[in-house]
Amino acid sequence: MWKRAASLLLARRSAVAAQRAPAISGSAASGLRRAPAFFSTLDVGQARTRVEDVMPIATGLEREEIEAELQGKKRFDMDAPVGPFGTKENPAIIQSYFDKRIVGCPGDEGEDEHDVVWFWLEKGKPHECPVCTQYFKLEVIGNGGNPDGHDDEDDHHHH
Amino acid sequence: MIESQRHSYHLVDPSPWPISGSLGALATTVGGVMYMHSFQGGATLLSLGLIFLLYTMFVWWRDVLRESTLEGHHTKAVQLGPRYGSILFIVSEVMLLFAFFWASSHSSLAPTVEIGGIWPPKGIGVLDPWEIPLLNTPILPSSGAAVTWAHHAILAGKEKRAVYALVATVSLALVSTGFQGMEYYQAPSTISDSIYGSTFFLATGFHGFHVIIGTLFLIVCGIRQYLGHLTKKHHVGFEAAAWYWHFVDVVRLFPFVSIYWWGGI
Image (cartoon, rainbow over all chains, first blue to last red; front, side, top):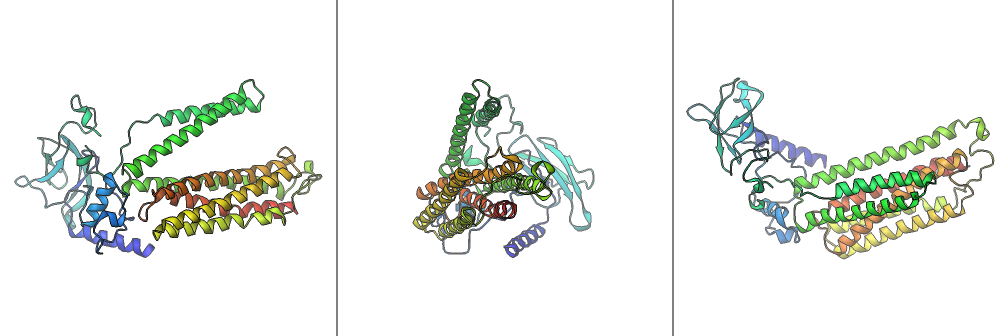
């Protein structure tokens, strides 16, 4: 069990290292956070490809999660946004369902890494990291509005 | 918004059960104190509080089962919640029972002059540990073995066999509770007979109460297994019941060794 958990962790680590992240994002905008992957037990490589073969009674989100996993996809968008170092000409684009989102900047790769600095990234107000000058811009992909759920209009949309 | 939900958490709907459970608990404690101090209406308030509490437990857990099994809200990330919750709950239960054994050891290791400086106290009749207590001790671990059988059956997808194994588990549990009841009925002392009776019945009684809780938990699992709710990949409710049951069956060894045997001879 420990061996399995350790190898999972190692696999995750190297995966993270492979796609070194200039931007870590916080959870405020769409309430997203990372879930531990310790209990991921479906064997994707095998011939089983239908949810019915794995868990016949699964329904709703649980079913969608299993289905995506069987297809080697991710149903949920829980990972921190990553991409090349953002500059004024070519900013790091952070997607958000709302008009603002908490973002953390870890600096550039290797030597140029710094402690994560958190800030609110707002629509129409690009942010420059005071430590490493990385440049961020918010791209609203949802209905916009406030992430706190107390919008004047559109209140019924929040789930 | 379900189609576009990009996080794997379950944001629960408003529910009346937290407040109804709180009111039930309030009525139970106030009614319990009133009853034990012979206030008028104490028994009524206690009974109503308990009924309210039991009703809340039923409907609340019914809602959780609907949300998980029938609506599919319990994704992998969500399943971690009840897992950690169950483990922490069991840890707190271990501490509770530890306190009772501490109380028993505290009173018996250095018996005070008021009880004759001996343990069991002077004039207190005790049960022979080599009769029903010994007979009853292996029953719970056997039931723990049966619940492991059920677990393996679930993991192997043998649905009927898992039901049989749970019936065996629950049967052994009921036999154990039956013996405990018989033992209490024939016991030479009561809970008001000196510090011996107080510690003996507090520790064994609380353990017995936990056996009853675990039995109900396993009965619910058996019914859910029969209905096909538990699958190879997802049976958090059963796992929690099995952990709880192992806690209960292992803890049985402590009162037997320290209270019935060491403290009773």
